[in-house]
Length: 328
Image (cartoon, rainbow, N blue to C red; front, side):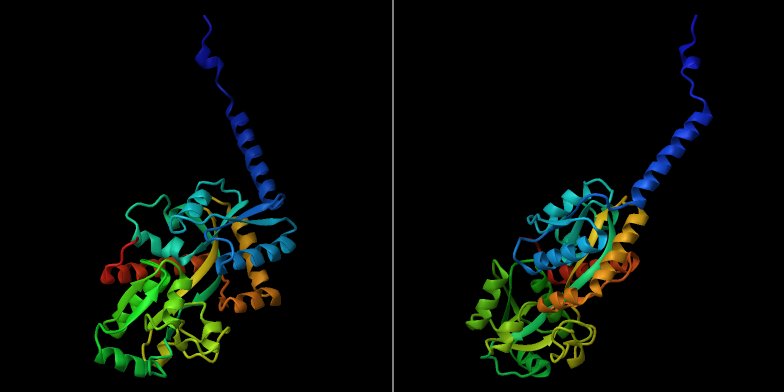
């Protein structure tokens, strides 16, 4: 009688040989990365700042890596549609995500159920840029700086309001953080888009807003900028003082964008992409584009990006809880 069990035994040396071949093939595949086009999924619609940033980064990376980097816009579900697609993609470096602070640090506290977990399902590669919120008031509000604005708000609790593009947006949270830290009562008025939120301020329908695309309106006199919400002055608007330096130390609210990959992406590929992004961020064309979007370049290591995600997740979770913010 034939012993099928014993006849199917595979010599241990053969198993080790196969494993070694697989390891060699994987190593070779990583060493010649990239050898085909890379997809960069942008979680925002075409035409906006995130799309413009994604396209200039893709163009510069294509030249540096010698392979096409193609931007695909996948907006929807509070940036979660595109993020979910990338989280479920092969971890080979050929599908990347241009994520935002909303995608990785705000959504976990806004939604009880999510189809991805930021630090479990993604490998951070590099922060690309950040655009600080700007606190601006209507020209009809008779204040020139933060000190005067705070005096006005404290003397008139609940009388003034601020606009945002909707519940749970970065502008809404910037306002919620401001009212909490400054201990003032300002009413939030949500709109359906950033353009509507800004137009409502210019018309005098609301008195304040926290947006990151106000340079042209402010320089034309249609809005009155009070301060920028970064810890240090922005290279794109150096003459505008920070809110922190005007009497609200520690106040910071920035919209940042960074590139991540599926979590199991090999470390060598992550490092190569990180090196490439940092090289691109040092190029004049990239710096000029970021400045034109009212932003500041960031760069850095995957580890520093990971720490930023963690810190902002904790920060915005506290703001969302204190202010009782909910998603729409």
